[in-house]
Image (cartoon, rainbow, N blue to C red; front, side, top):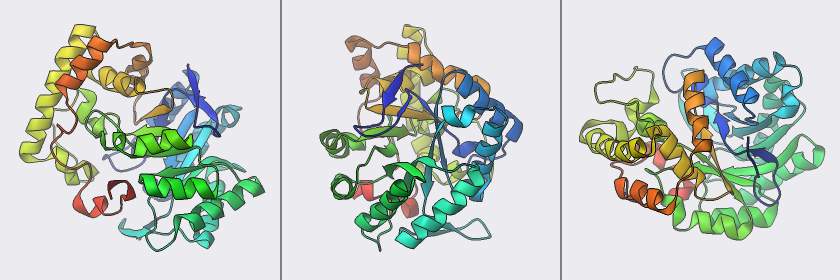
Length: 333
């Protein structure tokens, strides 16, 4: 497994990380046994970066990671755990915004440490900027936890270039977690240049656009009522048709290379620079193995040009979240 350092100040992690959200929530029914086996398979393959959020299934995802690591003695030392916090939930599963107050930061962290069964989090970040709290206050509170040894590194999530600069002026920021894929290239205009200017790495989520770029999605595939993709514009109506047509164009390029569509899409993200670490949201061992195969895919200039001709910048139809969730993205302002 190749490794990269997250930014100028962060930890050394595997070149691909494992996003664990879907193992406990969001994408329909889950299977804890298969999820645990997938985490173990990832660790066996050298994947060290495990990404979660304290609000994923209201803490159950952290408990899943805790139990998976406990079942493998010594694996906590191998794993770098990245945690997002700040989302407010209610008993019915609803969402109530984000809380970035310093007191809330310390409260959220205390609960995460307890659920994860660890004395520290490797990277800690607010999931979305709290519009009522200056980012300097939120980051400053995390910096106090770094001083106390309960957090190793500070990250950010879905922030724009200006917020990134303000945060970096407050305390060292190791990485920015943000959506980046052939379908979502918005960071290239201002956010990615700012991150590189500041020595901040990128952990890229959504590299397969929640399954659309996997090569396994079809129009006939039903979506479970509990699956959040029911609310994502790119999965509905004519937009889905247009997006799947783009995937078929990518499939032609991938077939010519002798790789899968998913591997081509992930390899493209990997090609964007060593400061970018893709997070793959595999929930099963077979999908994990397919995704990790992208590490063996080398794309030359001609192949990269063919991929970008198949899916040009801005070609995806529909926004990456529904309107309500888009309002929470500082990165889109």
